Length: 205
Image (cartoon, rainbow, N blue to C red; front, side, top):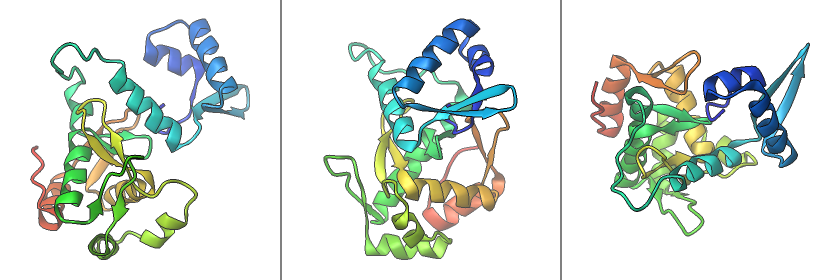
């Protein structure tokens, strides 16, 4: 559910490789805990995460679930590790690389102890020139920008309203293509050219 899509308990059971009854029990617990929303439609009940804060918590828990006693070796499938969605922002190697470029250019400062990042004056100008409505992002009820720990890379990518706005821009301009039923993102040839021209980011094919 970290891709932001709503799915039935049957679909989630198939994806998770568990029985339908087990999926139903887990979903009921998540619903009682306020972690998922249920969207009834016809005969079906669709489940989705209750917002980006829940997604960020699950992403961080995925990191903690690994054993700290052995050297880290990612077992994430290559397409997901390269570029994927983390709820509504970019994760994977691409997400981490973008976060580092934002900081290297002096557009983002931080993170602070609460993982929040501050948009600098240069950053506001740069993101506005890219076509991102920074003020609309600030006006939303969610965190504006923060360092979201990436479970496959063990380094942060940019979460929050700013991360969501950048993903929306990249999809609209066809820098990225979203897989139909997967979190995976594909970086287009046009996208690679734009990332290099605008950010100095040479993302491998």
